[in-house]
Length: 300
Image 1 (cartoon, one colour):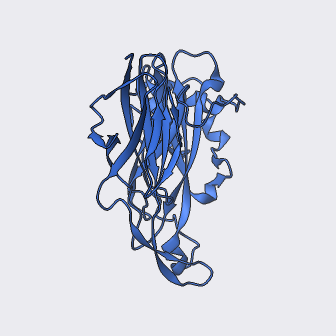
Image 2 (cartoon, one colour; image 1 turned 45 degrees about the vertical axis):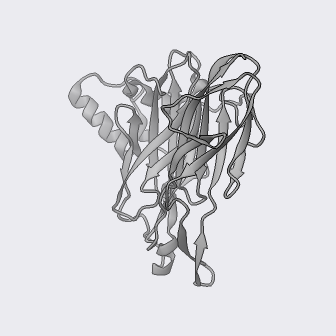
Image 3 (cartoon, helix red, strand yellow; image 1 turned 90 degrees about the vertical axis):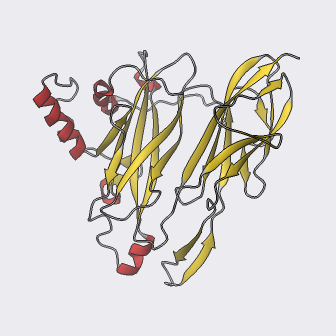
């Protein structure tokens, strides 16, 4: 459902010239503008030296295409409360990307030194966690680890407003945990107790209220070990994943649901349309998954 247009390399300098803007926000569940809804890392938790791949969940309106998504990553000692920082000296002269192939390679190397992980869709983001990612921690503390940081910026196409970009920030766990986190997996969407695949488009009547739910893949709710950093005592915990629901049209009874009561009610709009809905799951340890699906609303 993503629509990309021009090559993303021409957007990277714009990232560093984009200021923060205050926009009037819609309800958190409304899909009415370009939004970064979630990010997923595979694996969900890594040790130093491991390579991690990343994926973004982006919503953009049907009449708007997406130039691309730029990713940067860094360790905790290279970040502020706003995420990764980039040495301005590394960015001098990058406002006009070079056209010479050799100069382009040098340019990309410079950006990688600044923490560039990738730019969707041309270069899928990935990161090999630096070997010194847990340096400075006692052996016991390395079990719990520390957070690395991810910054990503989504650029809409055909806009003259630099402030129209969407920026997101995510913590990523790096540890030597013997039971590292795994992403929860959503298998299917369930509508009025009937299972659907993402490719199937169900039909409802205008103003009709239906029940939405999901089916999890086996093993999505994990047990894991947690070591209390103050006492050193290790205990076994069970995850409590929760779902967030989003829609282009219609309304929800609840927009967040928690196991074991994961279902919500959705009331279709009063006009015929085809609308997208999205559900995300988070396991509270950084694990993510999602399903996006369409529903056709017909006049009765």
